[in-house]
Image 1 (tube, rainbow over the protein chains, first blue to last red):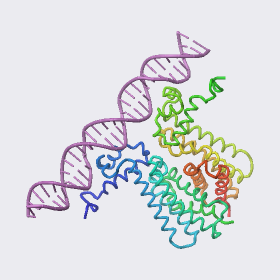
Image 2 (cartoon, chains in turn brown, red, blue, orange):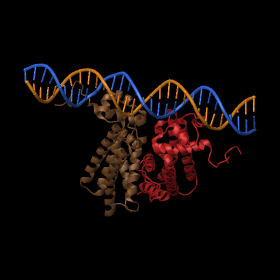
Image 3 (tube, rainbow over the protein chains, first blue to last red):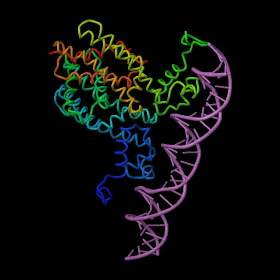
Image 4 (cartoon, rainbow over the protein chains, first blue to last red):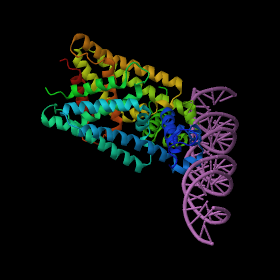
Length: 200
Length: 200
DNA sequence: CCGAACCGACAGACTGGTCGGTATGTCGCG
DNA sequence: CGCGACATACCGACCAGTCTGTCGGTTCGG
């Protein structure tokens, strides 16, 4: 074994601890308001350790983005690929993205609030991957439109942006301690999306 | 007249210039990334001038929030009050908020991205006014539900959050130089909202 | 089989620069 | 002469990133 199993404690590796604490702190107070010193103290390591694993504070933020993008894309791809009619797949995809979002609210707060903190290069990279994600989702909508299952008076592109806007906004009002759980909310949101797409 | 009309130049007053430049810069680069020095230079004044009219950098940000909240609330109130059936009023309100949002994209970027930069007191104040705004909008939805014009399987609260999420997200993808103008987009968005509310 | 060279993984002090806010001065106008 | 409306120099705090050092393990030549 290398070192992944356990040493004295079962705590995760240093980079993982940094990522976890960074996510929590950046979501809570904003990227610029969290100092590197504070972050490493929260993770129980030192600056030396952080700069050993990440080239900059920016790099740490980017790592959070990559984790989110990868998670979302893999979940959506899985749903798109599996069979079933397009209505079912779109409903499942919509409900799943809601569930995943409320399960990772901190990630989403950071995602939408801190994009402009990344270097232009990395912003482009994030936008590129995000676009691919949108396009995969949109392909479902377009499929339904072609089949005549969905109305096509409103461009698929607009519908998708409309829906993802709602998702984005979840990080501003959804509270995990409320009465509404993620699965229930996912049902509502998926129903709203499909209702607005219902063919006449 | 006091001083509002004109002096030598026709340029707006110092506080107005500060507000305008602050809005542009905060939206472009984020509150924490704009230094007071840079801001006052952009507005063509000095720090002394700024701290004469605003008690802090925070205070300037709060002034932007107040302007946005007031504008939105007054527009919505006007639409709600005028007659017409509930479908028409909701459609008009929805289309108008889209139009107002794309006409003031910088304001909205700041609104959603920088809320956590305000002091807790002022955050509460903003949230309070924002809630009142949501509730007024929601009252339209509830009215339609009571009358049976709208479906009521999904709570009005959820529907409103869903819709305002889409609005919020506009600041992330809508580009004024694109092919879609605000009025057209407002139609689409209002149609989507009403479609998702259509009674069976 | 052993010791020396080496290496990855940190620790922690330090630095150059920046920033929000303040204190004091000035100037024109009533 | 007094006061509102600024101008400007300045300060203390803080912060990202760097640099040098340390230490436990691994490798490798003899």
